[in-house]
Image (cartoon, rainbow, N blue to C red; front, side, top):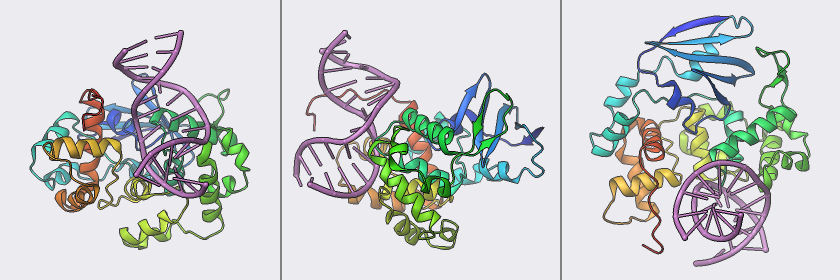
Length: 290
DNA sequence: TTCCAGGAATCAA
DNA sequence: TTGATTCATGGA
């Protein structure tokens, strides 16, 4: 089943490969991934995206929602502050988008992301899905595919089995989170009704979820533009691009992110993140320079 | 305050 | 080839 979706200024490569989501594989000029338990192949066309599925999905709402196809990127960009770093970041990667992921998959993925690099996170997510996710139909019957395991499925998995997916010390965090969701202690659907601050507080009550991971979930799953995840890359971007001459303390930096970037701060964060990761050479580490 | 837990890729030496 | 670095959370 193939369908085209008209969209302007959508950078599929950058969006699917920008550390937001971890179940996408480049296949020639296309991307293959799994969204809500459905295999899908995506291809960029001029002013459109083409999607291919194995079965007739009926409605395509799950896909258009995930990809944020109704979002008006041009309008979002006009809300950015007119500063040089953001101008350069947007110019460096036009069409970069934010995805709208499933909250549980997003939360689980970022719990196991802590102190891991993107490639390792992808590996862990693949192993978890293979071992504990429900089988789903794919284009090649000899190649079994799996949905990302639900919280209910993971809640019953012994920690040792999670460790075999290379989760390391994060295994007990994922296990506890799965049990909290499966047992109803935390209702991910309810978070949509809460303010970002309160939702963040709920999320950080889970073990293994600090402010950075909570903000990733709030931004990448719930679309909260007032969630501004600060990881080592964004920290570097803020320091080098906005405060090149002094080293502000983290408090000052956080306050800066809360006010400077306007109503679409989350989008600004994504552009800065992608910019420092791809455009700029790794800074040469000079001993004890600071 | 500092260290460590798991671990695979990436660089510098 | 070896060795250092990367990643972010929580506990000792």
